[in-house]
Structures are given as structure tokens and as C-alpha cells.
Image (cartoon, rainbow, N blue to C red):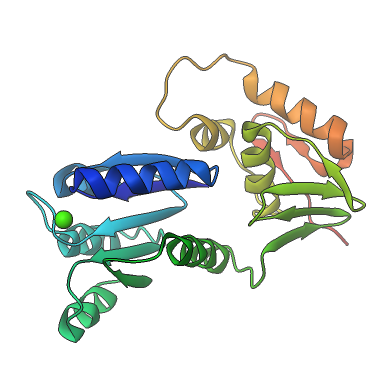
Length: 220
Ligand code: CA
């Protein structure tokens, strides 16, 4: 799961980034509203943690800009204010959740997971596909209830495919998911990861759609 963290407070941002990485999340940390506005609709992000009081462009404006541009990434607002008006304004502007500083990290993580699940139409912590299960909380994958060891990139790729069953995902979309904006991508690395996943979960798990991409086929 890739998270966009927008927070101008260095101490809080650093603490959050460390905590998110510890939870095996991939984090991009931006410190001002202008940069956040430019990046928030990037499809690599699964969730956004957005501070309201930001330099240059306020959090509310970043959020409105995103929603006006039709991007529906789940957004969790962090705010120093606990005014009802502020909370209502944020939710009315398209926020999915709202937390007031200071907060417990464990609660933030639980809310992030809930946002991610809701955005994927899942009501529990487990993604199931035939005899494959992915536990979103522990980030453990299994087949026939047997643990399957995955690298982080294999995990991200599998999760992306199994939460988009029946939809073709292009190689570029998958690359963005696993590499983000980092350059230097070998031309056949997605194929290599797909090959690993097929070996671990069975060839039928992932279908190649020639010239288009990959998909996890609908199960009967
Ligand atoms: Ca702030």
C-alpha cells in the first residue's frame, strides 16, 4: 500500500514516516500544499494522510482540488483543531476520515486500513481469491492456508491484481504501483515478478492479455 503523507511539521512527519515504513507501507512525504496538489491525483497512491495547516496551499484546498479533478483516493485529514466547523468543512470537501492531533499511532493505522478496505469494497481484513488469501493487516499471503513467502514487490503486485479481479492492469500501471516515481526500471521486471507469482500461486492466477497487460480472471 502506497501512502502520500502531507505534513509540514518535521518532527511529526518524521515520526509518521518511520511508523508507516515500520508497517511495511511505502510512503511519499511532501511538506507543502502546492507540491501535494500537484501529486495527490497520482494513481500510485492508495491512501492520503493530509494535514490541514500547510504552507502555500491549505489542506482543504488540496482536497478540493483533488475532488474537483475527479480523483477519489481515500483521504484521512490530520488537524490540530478540534472545532466541529473545521471537521464538517473537511468532510464536506471530500475527506473520508478525520483525526485530531495528538493521536495514537495504532488508531491512525487502523483507520488507514479501514479506508483502504472501503475503497476496494472489502469489509474485512482479508482479500480472498479462490484458495488464496491476503491478510491486509499482517501482509501475509497464503494458499490453501499455507504461508507463501513473498518479497515486498511481489506482495504489492499480487494485492493489486487480486483487488482488481477481472480488470486488465497495464504493465505501466503495475510498474507505478511497485516502483512509484523511481526510474531505472528494467524492461522485463514485471514479467519476472509475474513469473514468480505464478510459480507460487499457480499459472491460472494471472492471465496475460497480449499487448495490454495482466489480470486475475473472474472465478466461477
Ligand atoms: Ca501543519
